[in-house]
Image: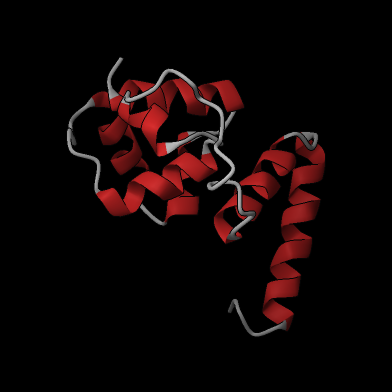
Length: 117
């Protein structure tokens, strides 16, 4: 299994969309698909750890150096990427009719703090 195939398999197993992964990494959706399809064969090293954190696995698993897809203790530091990925996963479980309400609440909070126009 290639690195891209491992990324895709892990993303799908966790129910994370390519859009969510792209947004969290601040890259385009097409970049995610290029990683997964092998169009970008050499995953940039500065992307490897953030992707592994979002996918709750280790860089070694994504690279194919181990078959163990569990997170080692050194990776699970609850950094900002982990918190946002977890929040996005939770929001995906909210019924669709309530997602708009939550989005509007978050948008209003960001606007009130001057973080969104």
